[in-house]
Figure 1 (cartoon, rainbow, N blue to C red):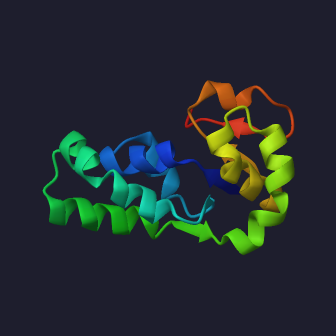
Figure 2 (tube, rainbow, N blue to C red):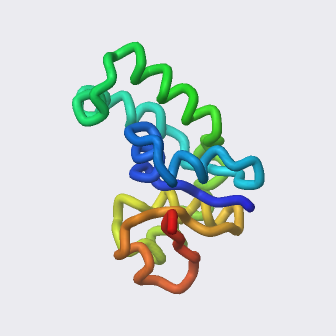
Figure 3 (cartoon, rainbow, N blue to C red):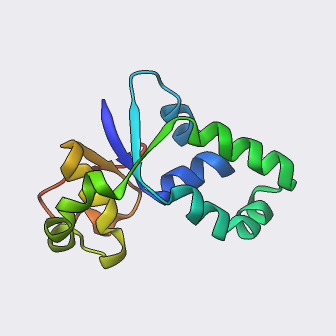
Length: 127
């Protein structure tokens, strides 16, 4: 199964050893995300370190392990779907996730209920 994970899913896998992390590491699931995921995680690292209770080194190790399961898709691959994704996405900031889902012809993995307020891309949560 191929699926696009939004940032909140990846953050959940970093912060907690729970269902999201277990699913992320299943061999039959191939996870994608738009490029710049690592950059976004770096921008909020202090907040995530505080939430996780990890020291900086442990946090970076966990980030690297989690990101080893996520393939970042370059804009050059999903950019041609930007216009359609902007129309589909219920949240203007989430269009890159929809663009990757459209490009890969797969579902989106998110816990944000508002992203289900469209009919073009299937949206699943961990449950």
